[in-house]
Structures are given as structure tokens and as C-alpha cells.
Length: 399
Image 1: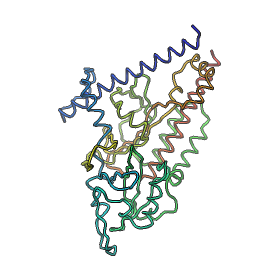
Image 2: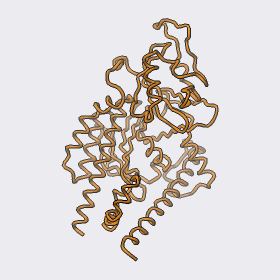
Image 3: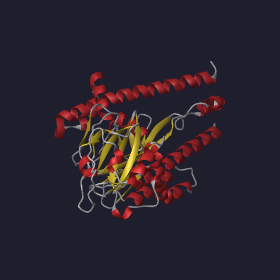
Image 4: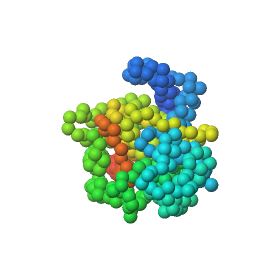
């Protein structure tokens, strides 16, 4: 058997092992979730993890559907789901009518004061300038590049960030209040976010390379300064899916987590899947009552909220190429032999870890700053990949 065939078989076995491990972990995640729903305050996480019980298939399916098709949102904003052709509302959060259509005495009354319900055209809710900008964005294929879109309510005059995401057959739009000092603004969308992150990105790009520790310490310090959270961590997933805090910075008086290892159940497999698609997740206040989403039928709206002994959190995914870490020299040689075939294939990605911010009191971070953190996480991901490549080159030379 040739070395390339042997390595290919080994790589296939590794992938199968990884899938089997993820499946086993998901069944345990489902069991933990079911126990939590029943036990409430009596829930004993450590005891259940040690027991290594597994959930039946039906319970696993129900758990995944619950995680990936959530019908609740956080109360710091509101949500509309639109038909992607007509831009008519097909679902909305219970608080959306109050937030988006409440009449203000400060705004002259209009004869066509809009209501909000199933079938309402979203453009009717906003003043002409905002409606025009939103209409243009909704027709754009990669609408995320235009986020956030500034709109102003027709009835109240209040300004909002409209943050649009394209889903299967629909558009999901989050609305978050804008501070009066931020509206109007001459810089919008991704450009504004990039400018917020530019200094931190330059700092990372200026690092000499050769140390993943220096890279991690730098990125947590920059995010700490940028966002003002009480704690910022670089959290890496190991090959067996357990997590480790590689770098950390905290405000004085906060218990450190640096160097601690956590079981794979700390971040469930379903949550990791969502992080691969939605790179940034924020919880403003884990104690706040969630808001229901009203819809005629099940819609592909994703929600996942994770809390690690903090009131507020901001989490950014670190995604790298699947073959960047853990490959031996033979795998690298095989990759070189198959270079032409690989160019035709899109690189598979994997979740290397998370950049995690915690706060001991409720905290809201405006969308442009969250998006700036996403830019920073993307740059960090690229540099993590470069560190892996450098390690491979050094190993190859030694071999």
C-alpha cells in the first residue's frame, strides 16, 4: 500500500472517529438539557457529566430542534421575519409592535400611521430615507455586508439599527435602539465596524509570529480594551472536544479561569454548530425574561444562549481550516501531492475555539462594536492558522 493511500485511510478514520465522538457528545448534551428542564435549581451538572448517561434518539432529535429553531429572543431589541420576495412580515416578536409603531407626541401625526402584524410591509414602518436604505439592502444578495442599516420609525421618530440576515426562504431582521449621539452617522455598515477595530487589527498583524501564547494574550487584551467587559478569554477546543482557557484578562478582584480545563459538555455540540454559522453571540442579561416570536408556522430562526456564571456575555467564534492543526508530515506530503485537486474544493472549516467576554452586570454592546469584534476574531483566526502552518514547516524540517 502506498504512503498516500495509507495516510488517506488514516485521515478517513480520524474523520469517522470525530463524527462518532460528536454524536456521542450530542446525546449527552441532550440528556443534560432534559435533566435541567426537569430539575431546575436542583440540577447537578458535575454528577450528571460523570454518570455519562445518554439520551434516546427521540430525545436527541427534539433537543436539536429546540436549539436550532428557537422561538424566543432577548428583550434588548425586537425581531421581524420577512418574506424574501414581498418584504411582508411573516413573523414578529411580541414586543415589536410597541417598539416600532408606538406614536410619539414629539412626532407630527400622520394619516397613515402603520400597524404591525402578519402581512405588514416592513417598509411602511419607517421614514422615507430609512425605508429606501432598507429596501436596497433587502434586495442585496449578501445583505450582511451592509449591516447595520440605520432606520427611523415613522410614528415615534426613534432611530434603530436594522440588522438583516438571510435564511431559507426569508429575511430575519433584528432592530436595536441607536443612541441619539450616534444618529445620523456618515459611516455605515461594515466600514464603521472596521474603523472601530482597525487599531486592534494592526496590533495583531504587527506580531512577529511563532507564539500562539503571545497571539492569544494580545487578542484578549485588545478585545478587553475595545468592549469594556469584566473578563475576556481565549478558549480552545482540544481534539477530544474539551475546552481550555489559553489566555485571559480580567478586571481586579475577579476569580481567574486561566489554565482551567472544561468538559466537552461545557459548550454543547449544537451550540458549536450554530457558532460556525453565526460568528458572534451576545447575552445582555441572562436573567431578563425572553420575548416570544409570533408566527403562522415554524421558521428557520436560530437562537442559543449560553451562560458561564456571568450576567452578560459576548462570544466570538474562531474558525480555521479543518486540516490546519494536528496533521502529521505524511498528511502534509499527501496534501502537496493532491494540490491540484484541493484547489477545486472549498476548504472545510472547524471551530478552533471561542473568544469569550463575561460581565457581572447587564451589558449591551451596540452592533457596530460587536461587528468590529467579529472582524478582529476573523483576523485572529487567520493568524492562528498561520501559527499552525509555521509549526508544520518546522516539524517538516526536523523530520
